[in-house]
Image (cartoon, rainbow over all chains, first blue to last red):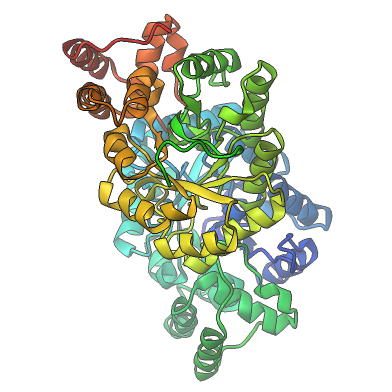
Length: 310
Length: 310
């Protein structure tokens, strides 16, 4: 698998943002602000992993997720730039969201394992993903597995992925590895990359190393606030200036990482868009404290952080 | 608070079963088998904490949960014997299920904290539970908090409960403590029992000690397979024979605990009802292996386990 190979559609590569979800002051999703942010990300060459962890996806009802997706599509957002998160605890919920995404023409879906029960077996997880695939029953499905053990507390083993790939080649299309650990992402690339299985590290801190080893890009929170910086590294990873671009990009990531990420990104978006309601999060999350907001502002100024004007 | 005091309705005390949910071979809920099991539990003096962890509640869609509840009510199951689990990750989902339960006249609701995000603050959790209460906006609501850190990975601190109780006295009615740790349950009883806050240990192994200290009963998985045995201890905790009843009851619990609990209970129910589909579980869980089933059968025979014929 060449790192720059364009896959036949459906399927997707490059930089994706788990798009943060704006809420009005009554905590209802703000569909227009969401669309505006998505369009800005697309202009900056970033595709849309809507309804990921940083989107507060698990804080949204199924109808809210479907409604927001429809709003994007009706406004002309190309479905081939979408990789909605569709993994829920309940099989019928995951099937419903996955079917909706596939029928809408989404490039792929990013699927968390069911995350309530802990210590479940690979057999149980295999059955879960199998049931989703069998029930959706659509050749256009491209399923990306979402490995985020620190949050889901349900890891996806190499053995499980090997078994899924053998049973559903082409359908099981790749994964997001959110461990933040290069050894982990590399192990998945080495094990399955040759089978056309696309691995996306969950942070741009692993993007450059990843591209050199055959990753498909990255799906990273901070693509919500530094899309052009991350895309530059993706686009020029094998050019001379890649290391300098990587240093600048990594500085920004590390600055946001010092704070609760979702709240920090929403705070910065609120500032740059002049729309204070962007600060809202749904509980159990909390908005950025004013102390943290001041610290973040100082830290960003120090590294000369710039909001993309595109 | 006297341990035997009957609370004004709504509210509930005694032994409750997190009712296991039967699935047909196509994994659809079997509403009639569910009703039959619920009626048997009620005849054995056990109330119904439907949609708990052992009910595979998080593996059910909201519509499935509401449909099963309606099925019970239409068949004449008294709402005052119900404590449905209504806690989801997404605020609108928890509000929807809680409102449905309250409007149906349920004695109470058992509410998991939102369990996807880890390491959330007490402030975020307080806001979450507050929003549920404010949005349901019904004086009949009796909310029991569900503390199960091993599964939810989101603990409910004494500080959080103190704050909720101060803000919503009467509405915040109690909790289930599924730590399995007597020191934990006792701490909650000692801190809040005097305020009419009912603590239910999550296992009958803590029932006798609990009743002596002022617990409200217990909400325990194995009430699905030993309702009469557990009720006997609840009913006679201060009588002479309590210790002997407790020993027998505990032996049964410990036997089931040696196996994956949900699968083991469903296996035994399938045998005693002569209905093999009771063995079905939804993924990511798996049914009891034949090896484990044989072991369990031998272990239960050894302790002379009897299915209640009531």
